[in-house]
Image 1 (cartoon, helix red, strand yellow):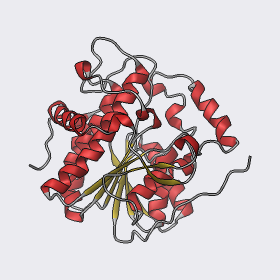
Image 2 (cartoon, rainbow, N blue to C red; image 1 turned 180 degrees about the vertical axis):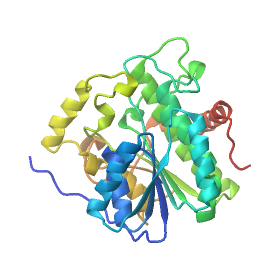
Image 3 (cartoon, rainbow, N blue to C red; image 1 turned 45 degrees about the horizontal axis):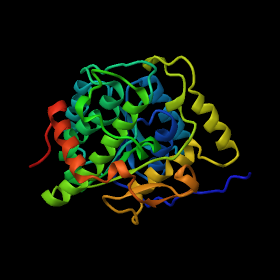
Image 4 (tube, rainbow, N blue to C red; image 1 turned 45 degrees about the vertical axis):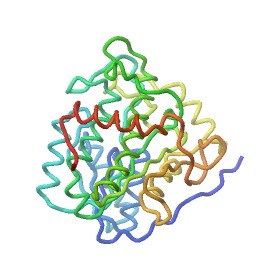
Length: 312
């Protein structure tokens, strides 16, 4: 089956600054490349400087005049998140776009962040929650926009309210679902609170559908020595055009972050069958993302766990 060409038009981003987490490879690298190509100054916060330098070289191969630079960030450490916030606030450059794209998925055994949180909940949700809080002055100075990247796993499941940190039992996939549901609820609540409080920023959420990215690959840093079987299966489906590639799967986030037609507080994903592939567009919220009460509850819990606060 031939793959249909799909893309989005990115408006000029000249004189704008964009920050993209998880941009040293995969979808994040494709996102950063497109933003740089549209004229944005792109900041890549990375854990691995060597991979980051390779990513910059890749971007400049496509766009020799790209303005792109690295900063240090380990999302498994709230101290590292706070340090990045300190660095960027000291630099004082307003942030027009923040795409929260980085994540980890399904470590084979329970692992924890430097702060003692279950790795997926701590990295995918809590660290990004804290990062947005630390960058609020820069986002507000630019009237900035935040797009938070979910996963198709968040279309089912829920939040383990009685044991958010998985102290009593552990299921890696359920914990992954929780991290992405929490993150989606945060992205929606961020828009509601900004609108109510006059913060001057906008927020929406996206998901990539399915693609065989490094999220499913062997990841020694999370204790996984081999690719997940799902990566091979998705790779086969991708080759026959049923699912996306890393380059097409990033399009919903790119659209949500940059399109004049993308709206605050809305959800964007692939529009093909099952929302696993195809061109980007708006879609209905999945059931786990619809409760404003749950969004308020996870917001308040996240403030307590991360010891950060947002404007009153």
